[in-house]
Image: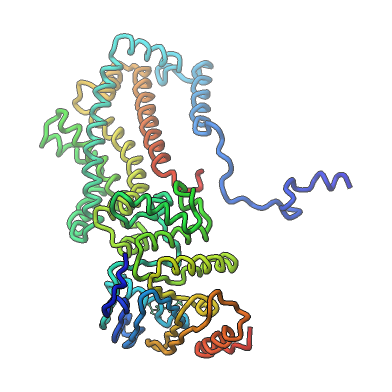
Length: 277
Length: 245
Ligand SMILES: Nc1ncnc2c1ncn2[C@@H]1O[C@H](COP(=O)(O)OP(=O)(O)OP(=O)(O)O)[C@@H](O)[C@H]1O
Ligand SMILES: [Mg+2]
């Protein structure tokens, strides 16, 4: 008797026997996102400590840390980082504005869509980086070319996802706007823009990643400053530790900016109840 | 807001003459005539697919891309309540209510409208935090806050449970008695029609086939013999044998 009581499910309402299958992924693990990277770091440290990883192939974590300290001490890291961050931010800002405006024009008028959507879909099929040779011919190898490349990499995901968000706004809400005789400005502000916001923010997540990606490439071509240049220089001298510092930096920047967009997402979309919450 | 100062349009805010609506080569409304007086509560019954929603959308001016002809004369200031509450999920309850309002007093009027439907204190809630019945009450507040001359409702209580629906009937009757809009309520529920309406119409073959004035004192009860008589004749007209179920 006692045993059968003990094996009963804890909630009285659940039917005896099998517990109800839960379709949600379950409660979030605290700091769950850090588990994978920490395991990777542990493997790296173990490999270096046991000599299993040659330091010429891959410097040990502690060497990377001291190198980073040296680079910060002589100011090289900050200077290069500032240059890189400025390029990425500029390209991101310009690309976001252009992508959003184009998406609004294409999403709100049939003519806009007819004119704009085709070229942007074609542009999407050509990686931004494949345009670099042409951009160098047109714009030289200066800042203009670099920021333009990043802008092009940002523009496409922002456009695609914002446009998709606009197009997928429930037509019932448009009908509601018509029945309330909303003015066009109010309709845009209250229905169109909030309706497209989830798409826009998703586009931004791809865009920040795209911005760093484009940055890496343009900084390793004919550059004399920036994190990518620092890494390229290190390659010539065989300094894997400096290369790793650069990689970690890129990774951190990518993670931070993605985290910032996700935070914005959570703030702006607090009305949504999704599987992730 | 509404002007009841006499004149033809004031006594008869809704006039429809020879309304034809069709989809492809299928004619749904076929020369339909309809008049609704100021402050009159009209219920519209009809079999599924008979064109009730099509008529309502024509009155609401929401059928821009549908082919048709005929005269539709409705007040500019009319509101629609849909079957789903159709609240914007990204706007808080109060912002949903005042969506169509202009001017500085909008927020005050919105609060008053919410209080009228018994949702004072829920102004800052998200629509997803409300129950289905509460959402439909917000939709009702949104429709009435502009003091419309005509309220168009397409099965507004269709998705609610029986008990909540009865509560909503009381609320709707109360609100309509206070604001006196002309009402056209689409429903498939004969009891609902007889309980609420001054006049019940039955749509069949693209026209108004039955036009029945309900001459009963309010509040009405299902036990009144007259109520049952109205109910029976409407069910017969719908082709249902009232002795079953
Ligand atoms: N957008 C549309 N395109 C094509 N046919 C349509 C469209 N809307 C309605 N119809 C057709 O018109 C007819 C009337 O539809 P309507 O929605 O007005 O019926 P209803 O009386 O409201 O039915 P219910 O009680 O089921 O809501 C139906 O046969 C339907 O198939
Ligand atoms: Mg219908």
